Amino acid sequence: MSQYAILTDLNRCVGCLGCSVACKVVNGVEIGSFWNKVLRIGPFPDGEGAQFPDVYTYFLPVGCQHCANPECVKVCPTGASHKLPDGTVQVDKSKCIGCQFCAMACPYGVRYLNETERVVEKCTLCEQKTAQGELPQCVAQCGARARYFGDLDEGLDSFVGAGKVSIGDDASYDAVNSQFCTYGEIARPYTEADVHHLPNVGNDPSFLYILRNHEWKGGE
Image 1 (cartoon, rainbow, N blue to C red):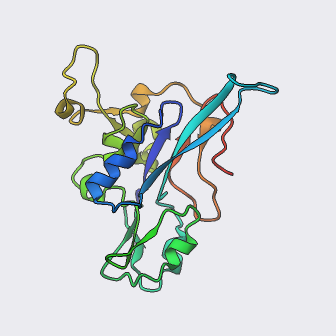
Image 2: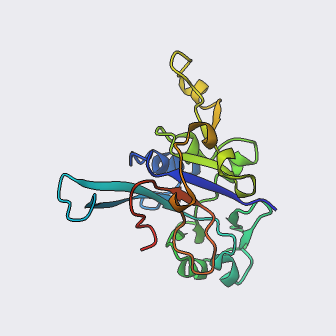
Image 3: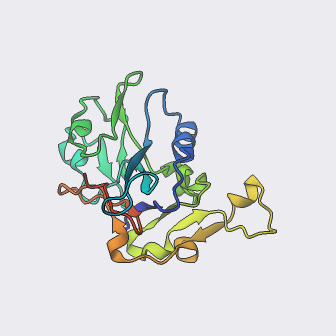
């Protein structure tokens, strides 16, 4: 069994919302709905007693966490919400009756009812792309190289991002998106204490966030 996930290096994320826009475009997400939102966390004092401008802010992308033990799957009465062997959580629209039990059970509020189709939607981790060896669109379009995709069973340094391009190389759109780099190749040093998850209420969220030198607020 695999467990596909996304790793986001919050020290690299600039809050450009490129991941949100790319997700909406490639997946046809309707206006007013999001499979991936980017939250601004802060500003907070950068040390005890600090005042502006000695503050820090970071950006936190939030979507379906493709949990190892998803609450949404447990409450689905039809089996529409289900977990695949690659660890992702998917919705079979042909079985979904729009009851929204899964949306109510999700700890992160990342599911919603598509009013037109009367089915629940959420991030699929771009299953249509990863099945062909491509990256999820939010990873492929991350200009800051903050997002990486991989299998937790293979370790974080093996996670892959787009754009293994050096100074002087071809930096065209096609070149950047046809070359991959691993997180191990590009990451600044980090410790286990720098690796975080969204709050765990027994669902075991799979996505990871790395934040160095600042206090993690994502558990609140």
